[in-house]
Image (cartoon, rainbow, N blue to C red):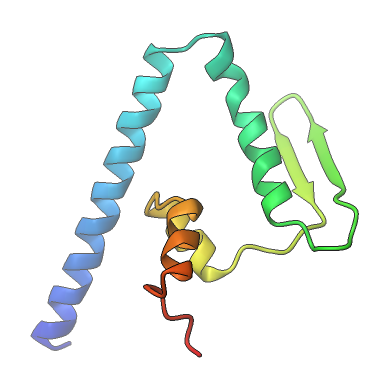
Length: 110
């Protein structure tokens, strides 16, 4: 393994650790500020994400399965791309991405 590979691996690990720490801090803050609106917001976020991923011209179907220890949320919209997942993990708003694409700041490989 070259020094470049070692530094790349360390860089990725530090970024992931930083992101994980930030997510935990935000979750703790939400827990501390918990109120009735915050407790319900997550379901609206899931619904909004499903709506955003809906295929045009097709009816959006959402399925929620609830058991004693799991909640499974699924829909018939498009799957998240690698970019979608990366932006979710890095906490970059899709609204910011859309604006950047409109302004020509993001090259989609074409």
